[in-house]
Image (cartoon, rainbow, N blue to C red):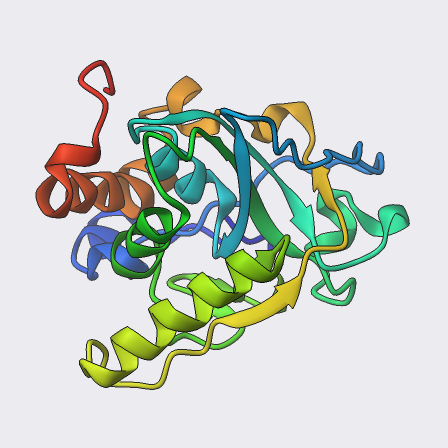
Length: 223
């Protein structure tokens, strides 16, 4: 995922834990992305979350019942730096994020946060996620309103009280200023490239964990 890491021998990679197995460079782009405005229609709401490589986040949330679409992109920085080349420097303020469009009558924001914290990433890691290093891979919830902030605080409080993690939760709660869609080649990457090594060794285990922990939430047609 990160451009600062190179290939190791495949045999050595397979000997590593899956979460740290591989990190592939991605193509780069230099065109600022388009702004995607949240849609809060009667049967549609939006959640913007960040937690490492947005390929894996998208692949997890796109498989949930009640989720109509997931867009990968950037949030936390300015429009002028909302492109992969700039964000990869770690100096833009952006985090790789996903904008999850869902029907709140079918799946709640709280349920999305359950998946976010327990499947999609490790919320205790600071400015990194697995093999990807830098503040652009930080754990963050970009809340769009007071209700989302309240739900996020409640989720963190529950997990902390239960001592669900050995380390403190490092997830940042940040008001959503804007979400910028990433370059087209990043959209639906795992679906289009299921055999890509990063997808196989880093992202696919998250989907497997989703099916194990939340089988009732997974769409019947999800691959």
